Length: 286
Image (tube, rainbow, N blue to C red):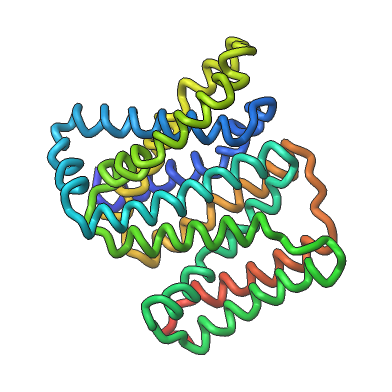
C-alpha cells in the first residue's frame, strides 16, 4: 500500500475510533467519571509501556524521562490531557455528548487563538473571521438561554493546549503517552485507594470489568494510528479529516443517545461550521 494511502487509512481509523468513543464511556455511565479516568490513566501507561517494549523502543522513554525540557513539557501536557479526558468522560455519561462534540468542532479555531497568544503567530483576516464566527456560535447558545457551553470550551481549550505543548516536544507518540500517563498514575492509584477500589471492585459486573480492561488499548491504539497517519499525510489533508471525529460524535449523541438537537444548536453549529469552512478554505483562493 502506498504511504499516503496507508496514512489516510490509519488517520481515518483513528478519527472514527475517537468519534465513537462516546459509546464506550456511555456504557460505563454507572461508574464515576473520576474512577473511569483513573483506570484509563493506569491502563494507558501499561499499554504504552508494553507497546514500546514490544517494538524495542524503551530507549525513547528513558530519553524522555531524563531530558529536563522534554519532561517539563510532558508534565504540562499530562495535565491538559487529563482535564480533557475527565471532562469528556463526565459529559458523555451525563447527557452532554452533543456539547462535547461542539468542543472538538471549536478546537481547530481555539488552536489558532492559542498560537497567536502563546507563540505570537499572526492571525490572517481569514483566520480572524473564522474565529469570530465560532465566537458568534458560542455567544448564540448563551444568548438564547441554554447557558455557557463550558464543556465544549474546556474540551476545546484543554485539547488545544495539549496540541500546542506536544507540538513543541520532540518525543514519540507512545513514549510521550507513557510519560504523560505515568506521572498521573500516583494520583490515579491514590484516588482508587481512597475510594476503596470504587464501583469496579465492589460491584464487579463482568461487562464493567471487561470494558475497564480495554481502557488502555482504546486510549493508545487510536493515538498510534493518528501518529502514523500524521507522518504520511499533508497537514491540510489531516486538518480536514479531523472534522470526522466531532461529526461522528454529534451523530452518536443525537441518534444513539437521543440528545435534543434544538434550533439554538442548529444556529450555533451552522456558525461554527461556516467558520471551519472559512478556516479550511485554501488561502490562495482568497
